[in-house]
Image (tube, rainbow, N blue to C red; front, side):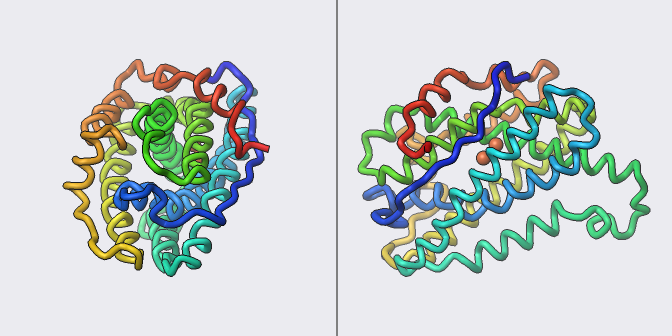
Length: 288
Ligand SMILES: [Fe+2]
Ligand SMILES: [Fe+2]
């Protein structure tokens, strides 16, 4: 459980000098990270909807306080990424249909239980199971946002690249708050369901193929939409090349990390260092 009070922070970014290929000479890493501007405004709103539905079932004051602060942070995160979809239009890059497709897919996969389980009797037990399982999917997703947040905060190679400062700060500020609130979703999952191994396997079994598929498809899509890119680099060769230079996490680090989530003694607090995140947030130029 988080030991300190989670703080939602208002932020402001100036995108006037930011191009879609925001790291000079690194189209793949630029667009791999740009995929967050499509997915996060959608799923972070969905996190808030699920947690709002879960709140009446919470009987622990500390869990409730953390869940409310988490919802406020996630709402600000999604809203901070969203303007980049419109901003990229000024650079001839239209990704609005990709965002609409992603929204439809999330609604279909993770939305209203009555529609998803249309053929099954949607009694109270199934509704409660689906609520707990969706909180589990969020906890599994937050396990990865913590790994990625820690990576961007502690990485020493990225600052050596010729990168757009506003985009770099968006990722660092977001990463730092992901580290700060890393325990909240798992605490809620444990509080509501006990986080049993069978359900953890189920939610990991959803999140790993989903994220793998999403990153491949969306990065390829963004590279196709970028008129400034004459050659569209291949996903897997570029991933290997970038991870061997320690510019993105390796597939082994990400998959290895997923095992820890399944271990009986899994504790998100041990996944990162809150002090490093808070130190960055204290000096972040984006935080108002
Ligand atoms: Fe977030
Ligand atoms: Fe988060």
